[in-house]
Image 1: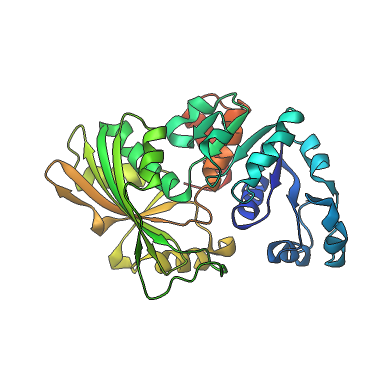
Image 2: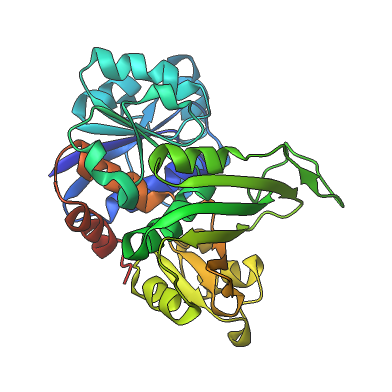
Length: 337
């Protein structure tokens, strides 16, 4: 049984902990954080299902005052782990890496860290093999993760020469107050980092993109124009997407009108926090333009990277050395059909 620890129990960290806990061949050693955040307080109120480790000793009394039972220090947790999932704020993971190196442990970092924090910039479906046996992996961002899923799906079927993406980006996660964009859309300079990141993972594809910040919180919507090496029509693309465990095909006609519809549907399914691991592709938004094909996908930014993070564990520890076998194990335990 592989032993995994999660450092940083925030938006991504709490979902990583839940995802690892669902894996039948992994054991969650515990989670580590620095203060009694709302996420930690909720964990306490739920009966503390996970062991908690203090990542900042000078805050131990503050944590105890909030009723947080401390199982030990960050070093204590890392010592017990085969691999660590670092979900701390951008820049903290780079500092934590020194501890992981010193203790001879493997670690996986999230998209906010710089690429040079890791040996491999990793995506479960697109370059699983490159992560096998590597000590440090870094995940792509939520948007990049979702786009690569869709583009990789097409690329493996018919090949892709280039893509152009437009990202309609939510401005902050639900519950965040640090960004105040309202009644406005804000355009970033092109190309977006997601297009550049896609080319890092899939260097054989020419990618460019534009990003627009929008004053919403429940998910991004991305449009993709793909130029396949062999023409593919709507019917064919639908079949590819429907066969993919991490892509959910939805229909406007069924009431899936946008990001809010998908968030509500995930809650109605009883998914914790309204999470959805799959990206969603709208059937009615798939169109051909000459040899190109255009489609739109929804990215549930809080949870979309969880499957690929778990793929990273499997690759780094060589639990499965074939891509399809590795991602299929992750999908099985996360109940992704």
